[in-house]
Image (cartoon, rainbow, N blue to C red; front, side):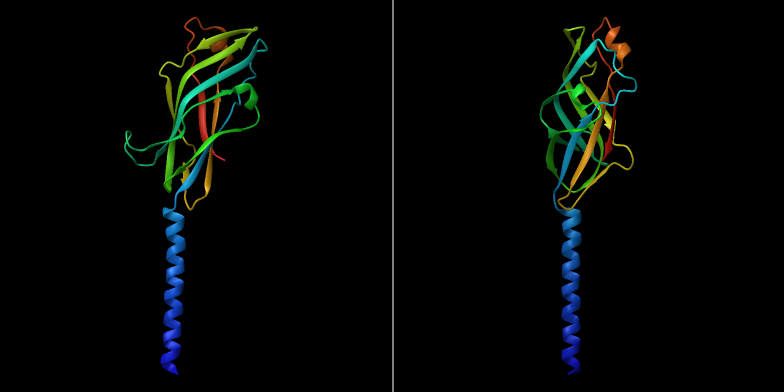
Length: 179
């Protein structure tokens, strides 16, 4: 009888270890999802002559923590255009992708053009490098266990730069955070 009780206890212990191992393995190694949303919270309201700011992204990527600059990037969005006036005080999801479980610390977005409608006339601007890298605030984004992590890109432009800019280049003000 004693042998049977030990065997049952041993079997229960092995079963618990297998279940715990499976759960831990799932949480730390199962693919996850990353979702990128955007909003435009300008530091100061845009001038009333500006009625639209459309940004065309060629890609938005997220970077794995401690990975090499060339190898750690994962494409979330391969292309999108958004009018920042539609996301002044509300977020809009731009896209999502499956990622390996892990920590992600930086966003990189590539912009082909920015068009601004001011006083009824559409003007095309460029961003000097065409690309911008920004850190994800806090401790970055932790993706694991088939869960979705949302990273919000706050993107805006300075009114003074839009209105008084003979070179037609803009420098975005951007931050990224987990929401």
